[in-house]
Image (cartoon, rainbow, N blue to C red):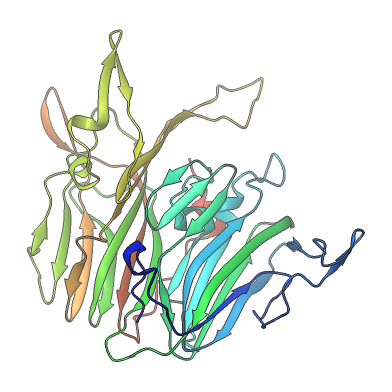
Length: 366
């Protein structure tokens, strides 16, 4: 059950494949593509949610289980006007399993798909893929025993036009005693505290496995920023963790600062691989042009790391942190930066209720 791989594709399975979009909102059998357009019946009559009002929360899917969500595809505009150009941080994605009241997934839409800062860019990894232009794809398997509910809240003060999505899933029986539920949580600390580790995830109680980290880092100080070590506190660890890495760029699979020298200049090297990547770097505002100020911004960097081949297992509890440590000609130093993250993990339910999501404009990038 739930073993999907290239080698297993010839094995005939038992289940019912279904798909939900705005035209077939319940995934009902034989009800896809029936809406009418000016071309007639079943000719792209209802391809998207035509408008999500300011402050409105829409239900993208509500599915009776047992089953497994296999793929999610979404696309939407990234700005509604000059004053509202961070739509990917204004839209909040939430997921609920088995009629729980507190979401197991809560994140700004863009960050969930490894696109922070209200920007969109290509991401080519195994579970998360972002294709031109803002084609957001997620392949994390998401099981549910009784019900799955996915919502999207528009926290922007303007309406969002034309929201497209498709959720592909399979209805099938499976053992629930050894099945973890998918979770993801966004956090941000606009200015980290010196010599105090940033908390990626805490208050996780139960059995599970940690499967990924997305980091949206805005550096606020000069020099190299990536000496901070990531720590995993497992099953009662207190002062010291069981797992501690060797540095930020090491955790994300790079080395020697991701940089190379070209004609006497230090150049950032971005990359995407199946399990880890550095897909985005920018120190310029590419959208807003103004006669009265420059387009320079604090350097922004995005990183992802998927623990698919090396999940971090825990039996009772989990806490994940990362240091903000830099190095320069004067040696190591404690830094203060603007850090936002999404943690991805599976665990047994119930889960600890997430802390209140940061207000909309506080989520906007610098």
